[in-house]
Length: 112
Length: 89
Image 1 (cartoon, one colour):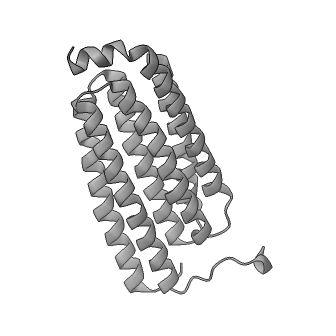
Image 2 (cartoon, rainbow over the protein chains, first blue to last red; image 1 turned 180 degrees about the horizontal axis):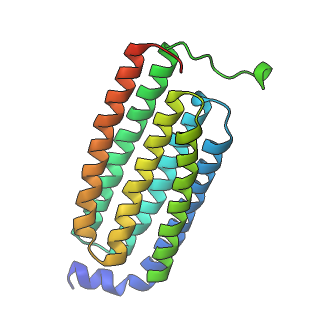
Image 3 (spheres, chains in turn brown, red; image 1 turned 90 degrees about the horizontal axis):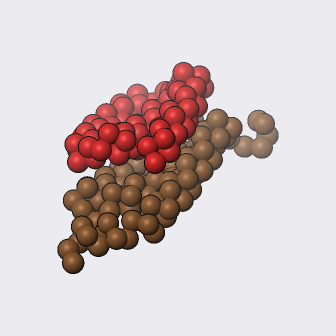
């Protein structure tokens, strides 16, 4: 039994699992969007953009990779996922560091 | 299954509109850069979902990899420039 036949046989369990993972990922992306909309300054918003967004992308891309079945495409999608997890924190860190070094004061309860 | 992926595509597109609001409105320039970063993350996911809809994931994944790398270079250049400039707005 080859690997592609195995993934065809397992489709009845991988497809519902991938739908569930994609829905969870959409939920996290939704939460991240609410955070970007509602948080008061750059330092708090960066949490929504980097942390929650990366988690949503993780669930979504793992769901899509599972839907593809065991093939080259699955490895490619997981490679994009690894790339995203390496690059997203780097970019957010660079932006927030630029904000801090430019002298942007963090939000406090007093200026609410 | 295809209509489910179309639903995912539409939802992510609506979420991009929220980030676009942050890019257009954002009080400081750093908010705009962060919003742009969020949009490009969404675009990467969107490309992979689009590949699944069209049944050509092998091609679309390569495009999204290139997009991620271009996003890294651009965002790092902008962040470096803003750090050297040293102004808040």
